[in-house]
Image 1 (cartoon, rainbow, N blue to C red):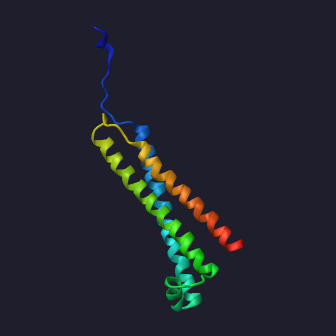
Image 2 (cartoon, one colour; image 1 turned 45 degrees about the vertical axis):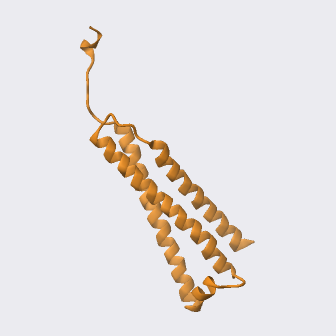
Image 3 (cartoon, rainbow, N blue to C red; image 1 turned 60 degrees about the vertical axis):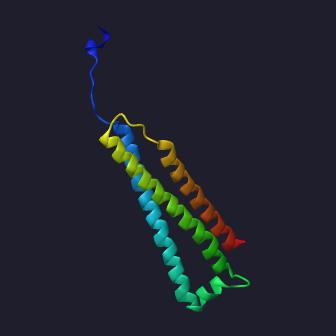
Length: 135
């Protein structure tokens, strides 16, 4: 008797779809920018120091600040970009799952966990770059 005024609208959660799509787009942009930036300064150091720089980077006894910068900040930036790209992939997967079935639960904590992990690694890369450059 109480269900006569109930309206069953079978549409997905629009707010969650916008959130997942925005997270995916931001993650792709940030991940691609980090990879491009890393490749840019690795190429710039190659042009500046020559091809022997990479051999020195692989088996150096005492690293210069440029080599330390590439090893530490570059590794953190690439790990951060991997987390951003994982965040975008999982966000698009969840968005597809939500669009197919509106009743599905969205694992938003995992998406934001990857995104927050990428931001933390990006912050650590920037702080390590400042420390290696100016201290």
